[in-house]
Image 1 (cartoon, rainbow, N blue to C red):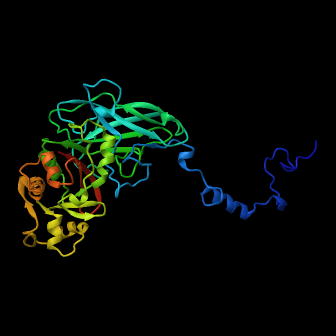
Image 2: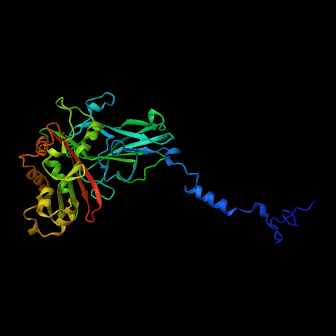
Length: 400
């Protein structure tokens, strides 16, 4: 039998223990080539790694019109104003129609809920699940221990790749949302989209995860009262934290266009003429209206225009730090303080005093702000914690 040189001199042995092997230098690894392969794999070489959306699904619920999934969103994009979470009164049983959308749901009623979802990837999203939750009104975020999302319902959908119209679909959630009388109707809505090839990471964080959409938005007009909502937001200011009220300016238009709904009169709502808005301090394209801070058991609220007059050239964004540190005597002419069980009501009363109006109906607020007869005003309430970190926001759109 011929000798098996690969197994050694003893055919029963599986290992050649000799030390006479000399490697073939012609087949030795090329260090330069190995380095290039590693660079290619890391995406740093000439052959760039493909984008994730070029080979897999890329699911999205938008934070705002034009959103392509870039996160974090805030600032400057409000991550709590998703145009893709929509409500229709259950009395309407036809196909989804934006003209029937509701901007101000009320407790005791039932609403059909719809979520618009996108697949921006080049691979279809098979077995995609869409779920919808409600959360108590306020400033819900991933670190909000006082909020617990409650499931409304869900649905499954197949989303085509981004080259096909079926990559975008409006999905109806089942069952419909029946708002109990003990709720306010101002609850926050949170939608999640998820599939095996592009999973949600399990955190309700619309600011950092494109799989999550959040709608903390009320659209109100005319005689609809806003006091209850404002008191709720005042109550939700975190201990040691801050609430800032910003006027969104022209950003109101795309929100209204996305939300749909019918007007009570023929004239379309428009963005306010900012030069005609009579309160606040300019910040870029918008206005800073007031700041509220919770200091122990009290809440201190200061209109921005009063602060900028009293404190020379103060930046509106520096007002929270000032209110947290200065003594009450120094604030007596520029701020209002609420204490005790009614401390949270100081937010509503301060806004009423700022606008010099007799009530806090949506139409009264809009008229007092100015900006034109048919102007819709976007008011953004933005909360941060004791360290100044963003928690969440709530938006109110008012018109006459």
